[in-house]
Amino acid sequence: MDLPLLVGIFPQVFLDGLILGFMYALIALGYTMVYGVLEFINFAHSEIFIVGAFVGVEILLGMRAAGWLEALPWPLVLLLILVAGMAGAGLLAVSVERIAYRPLRGAPRLIPLISAIGVSFFLQDLIRLVESIWRNAFNLVYPTMDALNHRFELTETIDVSVKSLVVIAAALAMLWALHALVNRTKIGTAIRAVAEDQAAASLMGIDVNRIISLTFLIGGAMGGAAGVLFGVQYGLINPYSGFIPGLKAFTAAVLGGIGNIPGAMIGGVVLGLLEAFAASYLSLLTGGAFGAEYKDIFAFSVLILILIFRPKGLLGEIVRERA
Image (cartoon, rainbow, N blue to C red):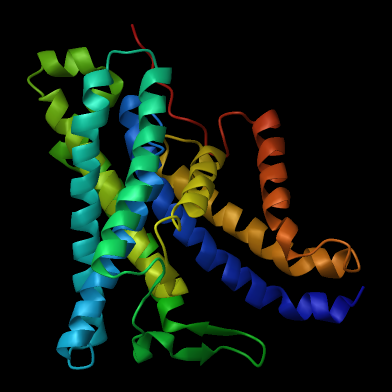
């Protein structure tokens, strides 16, 4: 075991895990929003997330073809594709709720869950069909913005790119905005009322269907923003790119305490750090017997242990009391 090497790579591994964790956290916010109101797991959220990434890449490709990508400042371009990705994914989430979930709202929980899985497969193949017709391509590469790829050398062994800092800043800003929306606005009060008791909220004059649609819109928009940042950060997307990040984001939401907004953020960061440390240290600690390919096993094993001893997650699930 090379102790100086283990210590030397620690800061960079920690930084990489933090960036990955914030990515998971952004996706997990969508799961948390929907579950907090309906106690329903929207398994189509991973496809809604990747739709945001496709909206962003299509706009970037169009701007590059028109010669605008180099002419406009990168913060403006990034803001444009973020807003577009959020709008596209949010509207898709509202449409999915209206078509696939609302008619099943009073049904046993297993039925909407099966519907969500069906919507997930449908959206995967729909994206593949559209892109095959439009681009005749399965994988799409995000056009690069040179300023985002610039790296800052913090020390001789630690460096960070501008796009990684953007991911962290965007995740923190969205967490703050979502927390403020839910806890400090009238819309947030209505969302919390519907989450507490839909029948009582309706009697108080709240349009329950509208609030549920708004919840899906917000959750989908969070997923769309995460999709755009995912594409910018990793560069390559395809119709199935959302499945694994979506699954891990759901795991992060459960780890932090599903239904708890700060819990989704903490769960995402913890899971990202576990993955990064497992990918970097397993091979060194086991003499090559286990490599980076076992990082998922390590991360999910820790999740299982946490849920055995703390089933409500790290911060605790939001539990509603009914009279």
